[in-house]
Length: 69
Image (tube, rainbow, N blue to C red):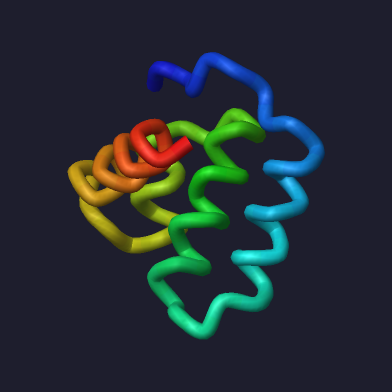
């Protein structure tokens, strides 16, 4: 898997962790968790198993994250 190039700032990491814990929307919590795991070095294959979604879904989450930064 290609990794997201830059390291998360501490503020961004805190924001993602807050979203993961506090969002009312399950899918939003999943996406935040996924981005955190990507930055911890998890592979696409591992994320597919963890979240039980398709590779395309994981790539869509990554693309959305990169486009909305």
